[in-house]
Length: 123
Image (cartoon, rainbow, N blue to C red):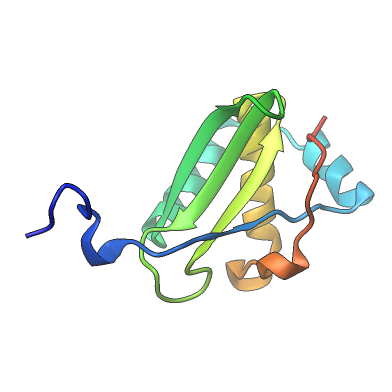
């Protein structure tokens, strides 16, 4: 039985952040898109069925919102990775996160060494 000190048992593994910056043309496309609530629900529902979980939180450092998604299990594509984006509002961050996830063929994200740091907000 796990103790309080190691209560995560064997389910914990280190994660790496993937922060990918779209081109200026792609960023314009993201900004101009206006998905409705049902579209968000459909894309998020499909990702959840594929084993992903989502987090949206305010980031004091960047004074904006962070949206992240990661696999619940540490096997398969994107295992051990956290796709992370920033936005000035929770919905803008979520919109950019879902766009980025769907941009990559077969939803396979770039490795962290191919992602960029010091990313700008979506607006």
